Amino acid sequence: MIFCTFRLVFFKYFLVKTVIKRQFFLSGLLLVLTVSLFSQIPMNKKPEPPLTRILFVFDCSQSMAGQWKSDKKINIARHILSATVDSLEHLKHIQMALRVFGFQSPVPPQDCSDTRLLVPFGPNNARAIKHELRYLMPKGTTPIAHSLALTARDFTPCAHCRNIVVLITDGIEACDGDPCAVSAELQKKGIILKPFVIGIGEDPNFRKTYNCVGQYYDAADEEQFHDVLNIVIRQALDRTTAQVNLLDIHGNPTETNVNMTFYNRVSGKVMANYYHTINNRGNPDTIMLDPLITYRLVVHTIPPVIVDSIKVYPGKHTIIAADAPQGSLQLTVNGSMYKDKQFVVRKHGINKTINVQKLNEVEKYLVGKYDLEVLVLPRLNLTVNIKQSTTTTVEIPQPGILNVVFPKEGYASLYQRTDKGQIWVTNLKKDVITQSMYILPGDYVVVYRPLYSKSVLYTRVKKVHIRSGSSQTLHFY
Image 1 (cartoon, rainbow, N blue to C red):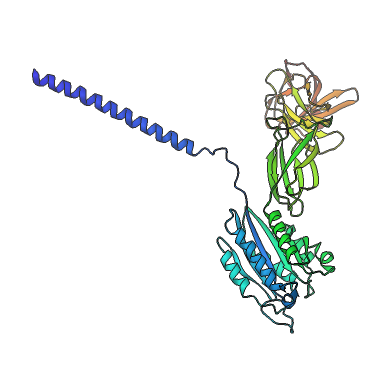
Image 2 (tube, one colour; image 1 turned 90 degrees about the vertical axis):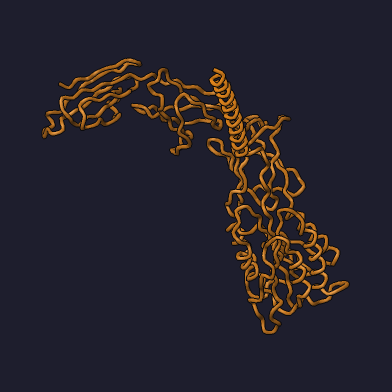
């Protein structure tokens, strides 16, 4: 008896312990799964800024050995550039590279291929760039167009990069190349943004020559060169603020909740997507844009609104206005017969589809007139006028049901009867003898001939009137 009691107590203890362990295990498993699940949910983080890659294209041609105020041009330029490289080394999301031209072959003769990437892009390469600058000896010519063309190889493919060229030179193209055409092509292909050009010296032709290449800056003396290089670097690194005012019909920025796509106007590349938002202060929310780019803005209203040639400037908040007055449209129908039916929306008088919308759903459109084609039988064509901040609701008639019964398979067509005759609606299936379809209320005629009859005399015609919500049956025997 004592032994049996002991076994019973031990069994209960073991059972309770097992249950507790299992509950503990399940609780732990639930905690792990919960943590794992939430760890996979992206937090509301700001997107990482792009990697800015700055390629210094440095002139080491023979003329850089000339005297420039307190020292030779090459000494002043490499000293100031080295200091700039030093200041950039520890910045996040910045990489640098160095291409030099005119340093390998003396003139004469003129070597127009004298250009080389001395230090490629990579982290922590400021020391390498300064080392190369230290030992440069001016001796060659000025192949600027060729040097710019080769920068396409210097910028390896990168999906989230800003590629910037800073050209530092004291001369103009000496090898019959076209720096303007090369720069334009590189920008069009989206390889680089508009280059910066710093002209060393007091040559009045510099600005005229280089304005078409990129953003040109004069550096007439050592102090100005230092200041200009700092300005260029600040502009290369800066992003600036802007807001888009989506204006209603009264010119107030009340429209919102629509996506906006910013394109690089030169390359056509998509630069940013922002879903327009009114912030907590009731103003259009601030967005960040790159001041080195000229933008083309597409506001994805229906139809879209386009604002072209937008320029933003470093340190200046830009307000971009777009006329986007909107109202809403809804087509309704009683019952569930047209549950999945759609209608085509076109601008009034323009035969181009801008949207396909479902019945009983609400969609926004720009204010104005629209032609609608409802994809029912027969096609229903309407013209509506969308007004500011108003929902235009159109109720279409509830259909009826037409049942057609043929004695044999055959050819048949449905026509709508009007005062001017009959209008084709649809062809019926030729390989079935019983068919049903939803038809708008009205007067109709069905024309039928058996499939294998070889005489027009076997054609049969029957009229029918369709009422909303009712069913009509035509028998052809």
